Image (tube, rainbow, N blue to C red):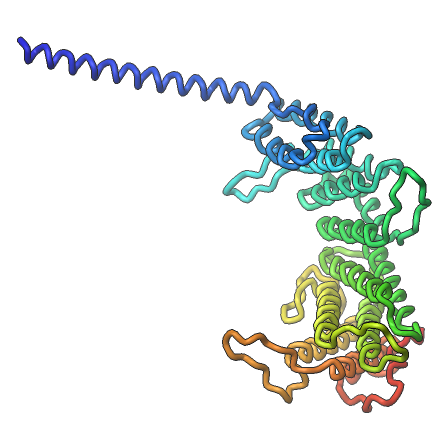
Length: 457
C-alpha cells in the first residue's frame, strides 16, 4: 500500500510538471503574438525626448535604435503609416530652431535612412529608399534659409538615395542639384551677428560629397554631367597653374589651397570614370582628353614647385618642411591624382583592362583623342614606375620587417616631375606625334627648366 502511495505521488508530480510546461508554452506563444501585434500597432520611439537639450548626446544612438526597432518585421500598410509618422516627427525636430543643432542634424540624417523595403538578409536584395523622404531632403537642401549643417545632412541623405536607387521621375532633379553643387565655386557670404560664415574647406566637402552622388547615379546625363565635371577639372587646373606662376615660395595657405585644388580635380576625374559611356552622346572627347592631360600636368607642376621651394628657396623662410616628409606628401599627391585620371579614362586601374562601359572603350581605335590618351597613360605608367621603384639603379630593400624606403630623393623626384610636365605640355600643344611623345629622349633639364611647367595656353 505504501509503495502504491509513493508511486501515485510521483505520477502526480509528473502530471503537474507537464501541465506547467504546457501552459508555459501557451503563455510564451501568447506573449510573442501579442508583442508582434504591439510592434505592428504603434511606434515605440519617444520623439519628444529628442528635443530635451540634456538628451542631445543620446540622440544618435536613439536614431539608430529607432531605425532598427521601430521597423523590424513591419511591412505593408502598417510600415507605410509608420514611415509617414516617423518622417513627420523628424521634420518637426529638424525645423525646430530651439532644438540643439546636433539633434536637428541627427533628425534629418535619420530621415535619409528611412526605407520602404528593408534589405533582405542572405539574398543580396538591396533596400528600397523611402521616396517621400527624398522630396523632403531636396526641399531642405534648396532652402536658402536652412543652416549649412542641416543642408549637409540633407545632402548625405540624397547621396544615399542615389546609391540605393532613385525613381526616374526624380532623377533629373537630383542630377541638377548635385551638378550645381559640384560646379559652384566658393563665395564668402555676408558675416552677421547671428550667422556663422561658411569656410572654403566646408564648401569643398559639400562638393566632394555631391561627386559621390553623381558617381552613384552613373549617368552621363545627355553629356551635361560630363561637361560639368570637365569644367570643374579645368577650373582646378587653372587654380594650380596660377599658384605655379607665383614668383614667391608657397605660403602655408597656398600649400593648403594646392592640396584642395588637386583633391577636387582628382575626385572629379575619378567620377568621370564611374559613369557609363555605353550609349553616351554629345561627349567632347578632345576637351575631355585635354582636361585629363592638363590636370596631371598642373599637379606635377605644383608639386615640382613645392620641392623647389624647399631645395632652392628664393627667399628666407622661418621654417622649411622636412625633406623626407615633403617627399612622402608629394608622392601621395601625385599618385592620388594620376590614379584618379587613369580611372576617369579607363574605369579601371592602370594595370587592368579598360572596362567596356568606359570613356576609353567608347572611342574608335583611330580616334586622335584615343592616341593622345595612350601617350598620357604611357607617361603616367612611367611616372608610377619611378614612384614605386626609382630609376632602376637602386635595389629596393625587401628584407622582412624592414620598412621599404623611397628609391629616390627629393631632387630626383623634382627632376622627374619636370620631365613629365614637359611631355604633357607637348601633348597639349600637339607639337609632336603621339607615337613618339612618350619616348624618354628629352634633353637634360637646363637651368630654368621650371618654365616648362608653366601654362602657355
